Image (tube, rainbow, N blue to C red; front, side, top):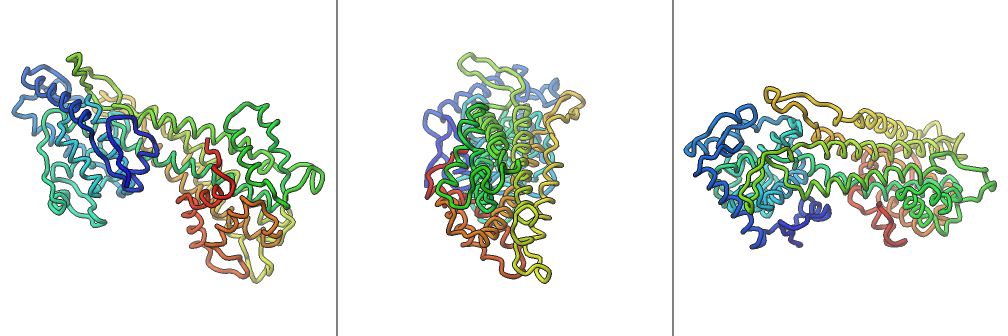
Length: 509
């Protein structure tokens, strides 16, 4: 199992490795030293009784209230308890693991004032699989993800709840079963733990990874449909794409040409029709626009992964503490709204390709791809489901980042709603996976009438991957479990892996 070291640059694949695949996390000696320097500076500020926000004062509107050295531990503990008021279902384990990693990474930079032993306990949670229970709703994404991060941090002090080996229990019991001791927070530590954008960024990291897989999967599904409908690949000619200049469009064109290379099902202009409908002809333009957008989102998220986002920030070399606003989630909020819109378009155009497959007036194939229409409905209702998911995505794609509502007695008078944007994007991505699963199901069924043996080598691999999970539809049966199997094939990367094993690596950006 790989190990991810904190303190240096953290990549999006690193985050996925820890959050989704259980990679271990470690601190280097150099990182321990820089963290210790930051915590030593906090201790000095407390001894000198200097008025510093969140260290010797209260928080938010209480920033003018002075806190004595004797009240420091109570201040930090009370901060976690009072801010842990999120609601709703728990965030998935992989999201909470990503939150733990990202918060630990930011703290490891040495500008937050946390002690090494507190940071190490956070890392131990990851390495032993202790997952705090974090309700999904309640963050404004302005002073960071205060409520979610407070819930994430409660088990550090023996409070809250956690999952350990799949069992939900109190934070105190989870620590005891894991053989760990709770910490007593010192000055600045509670604030350092909860003042950041790690909930929205954690969801964003996993979302970007999933979106990159979806981009390739959408190209594969579209290519399979294109062959089933006898499309005209001339529209994907590289000379056309180069005249538009957009890199995402050009990458999509290259993918599509590779996917159908060697096909005996596609056609030439005028052979069957002069030109295809937009859902086939404009694939490079539509998929490409989403590809370019998602590449931008990936860059924003990677910047945020490696940012220090709490407040105030310590600069031990200069002996300075500066209060600022790095916790504000607006950059991530905008990116998450963009991600939702870009991903939603992949499903939007896919649903129209599904309609072309099942509609005999558009496909020239049997209605709803069944040989026994009337007694059997075939794949009729799969298009209904796709249409429903696409319609839901239109609501979810409405931006959250344009909203703001003041809080903390108008001290925090502009907020990002970044975590709401991230959660919406995550649901859009799940919906897109299912729409693409339906397209794969319909395209594979259409090919039973066209002859799958005439597919290109790459799309033949996609067809066979589908057929390993879903048999041809000879008579009506319950299709919901099969849609989910295909959606999981997409989510796991198995579809892309099967195709890339034949054609080589496709371009995601």
